[in-house]
Length: 233
Image 1: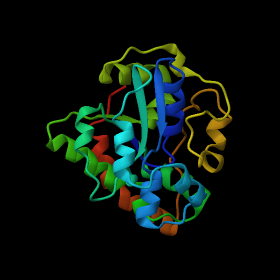
Image 2: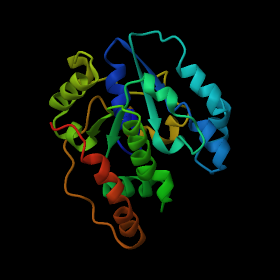
Image 3: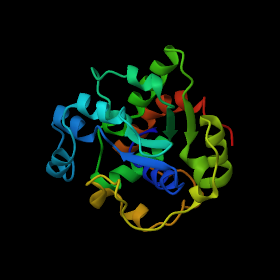
């Protein structure tokens, strides 16, 4: 699952984890990303200590045996930096989870202030999508707004597209942190930890001003390029 931040990816991890036949992996390249970029993220030291800082080691762990028939790998697209090999993705089912940039910018800025465009992952998501397509792959695209608007139809469509059976268990989960959560969940997962299912449909786009509005506008072309291929729910 290839997502950017503030984009329903953790709720989707909860949904897949509730299936009963799915193991979940939470952002396995986060430490490698922080080590390579030097970015000062919340809980940086704890993240670096919790995971391999070499992306190759993280990749090999993902390609090992799985303990359940299905594995949900939650990835942030921006963690896949230039120079990190992506040919291993050809053996996986790749789903791109998208969200309108105005919503992402509003949500992210409420947590961390004005973000850098690269941290939000829109350009990298488009690049990775187009890279897979150029290699003859058919990634699945689903919009988080469609999931929140109609969770069961959206999840049924997603399961059909990736070749697994839908189960109603995906519609709800128990509240609280989960063993698969990264250590950063203590900072970022407060809302999802208090939830037992998907939040309702989102309202109108947030009204942004100044630098936030300009940032969201600069991201829209990349969003729309991927959104043009999204599942129709």
